[in-house]
Length: 166
Image (cartoon, rainbow, N blue to C red; front, side):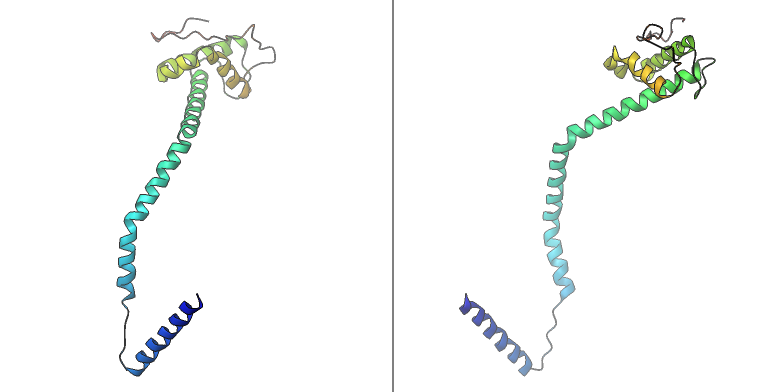
């Protein structure tokens, strides 16, 4: 190892003295050299970046899909409740609703889901009513006397576009 270091130092000394002895200016085309190196490394860098993205997508894909699906459910449920408020007479957002009006809002929200997201309507199934009631409760629209006995836990929605009367 020491011999190599000594040899490298000697070669450097010889080269520098030969350079100093000749009054020739040696220029190294750094720009072209760096450009050539980068051009040679570019395909490898792109390949490595693509490989990293593919690995990341394979690793996080299911989690991302679940998060996007949950966000989609949240968005559609919010719009359904907003549609229920907009379509039911006497339903004002930010106010406590009477039980019959709350049930009408639930039915309109369920009908909105049938019309706008039928696959989600089928997916939610029996949980739909409870989820819509939770949204109404979070909005502060349910009165204190609201319960499973007087709220429509399975809001009727029909694919033909008609909602049964309250």
